[in-house]
Image 1 (cartoon, one colour):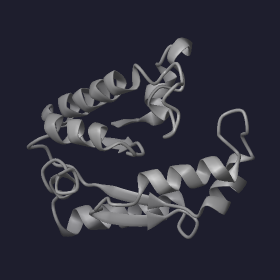
Image 2 (cartoon, rainbow, N blue to C red):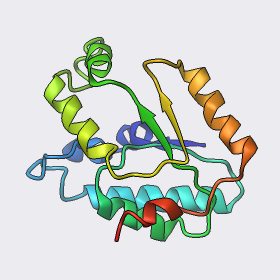
Image 3 (cartoon, rainbow, N blue to C red):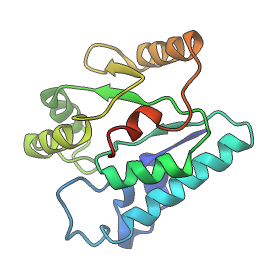
Image 4 (spheres, helix red, strand yellow):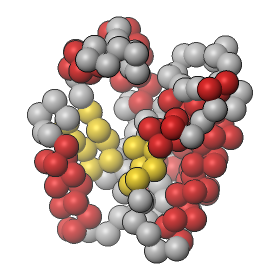
Length: 162
């Protein structure tokens, strides 16, 4: 099952777009009030799918410790592999200029995102999409899953929340 920011945005009403796609540093955005609820619904959906025996892949950038703490609580006891997906901001900006209506195209937004998403997090596996294509990234993550089972919930991440 593929859940995450793109799936969530597709079902989010226009009045609260971009929903969980809201970038850090935009607290006055009209969607900001509903974002915590949307993340809670996402975590609960992931948990429900997992408890029913379905494998779940979630593409979401965690930049808020509160959202991560909520995920840890809601996904407690479930197998979760925390993957860090990196890409230099210059490559992000270049790629996003292809679809400017969908993505922020300026380097400032890309840098703000990079600074908010990755520092202080502990990942089970990391990939760089400027070096590896989608299939290669998936192979690295699959290889990690085949070598060692995923930890329960965000055990490592939880140590960063104190």
